[in-house]
Length: 114
Length: 111
Image (cartoon, rainbow over all chains, first blue to last red):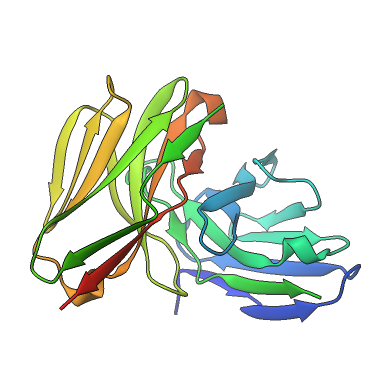
């Protein structure tokens, strides 16, 4: 089983609908991240969390919200999806200790907004 | 603001050596990371440089020159499985020490 698990892996949704992407990790890491990747481009940080009570906006947080339900769970919501939010979304984790410069990614969630 | 530049595509021959360059502009530079991503896959960590010099890990090496705001990833003895996109990413005070990513370099390996 993957250490960082994202659900759903693929989703097609309509404009204006609310969609939630969920992420859970078994690595015991304190830091969790949500990234967006558009085709042919690098990753952009949406939100990041250092622990359950510490959530921070990234470069492109507008139109997104997050919830850190537990140390192991970090969900991303699009309250009213729009077509330009069509992208590949990655959840990631990091441990602020040994190996702190390594970010571990989930397998990604393809989201298409029509 | 921050910016990173890397070539969009590099082509090399199996068994050869290839260098992927990355130049960056930022304030409060902290470190440079490299990640590999195969088509449809997740990025995976390759290396991290905070100090000037060369870091070697098997067939892959990464170099950093802080004074030149420049780094590169060196891949030796290229194998077909190395065909992937390679991303440099900078950690800096300007971005609250979160990674800012380049657009990636697609490495095409020919037999």
